[in-house]
Image (tube, rainbow, N blue to C red; front, side):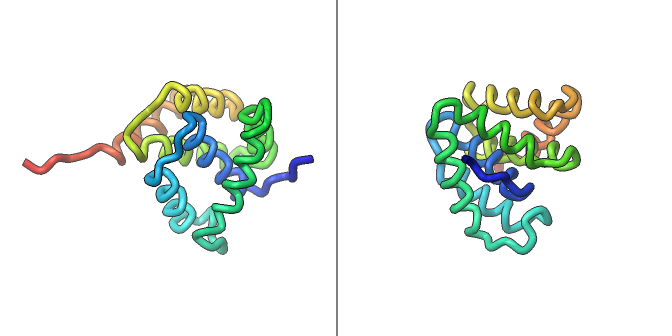
Length: 140
């Protein structure tokens, strides 16, 4: 039986799943997750490398048949409504980190938004904000 997640663990599961659904996990994505854990108040009191244990636990769930659905069940149960937008935007941050947006990642984000019952306008605003943060400005 899978354990019940705490809200910070559920946020890790969202980010890690977003990075793995395309079957490739880039170094940039893992570094971004570590950076997020080190920066955000939701992870206050956790060591920066704590997420690696949670990522491994998430990977075990994902490795089973129906793994993505199981993760969605776990995170939906664990996250209060006020953290669901946070989870969505953090998953977007991870996906956008390596500047490649694959169909599997898009599908996972759609599933996450649906499971969390996020309004489409909110989802569009969150995604646009993430894209704006990751926009590259070339020096001329």
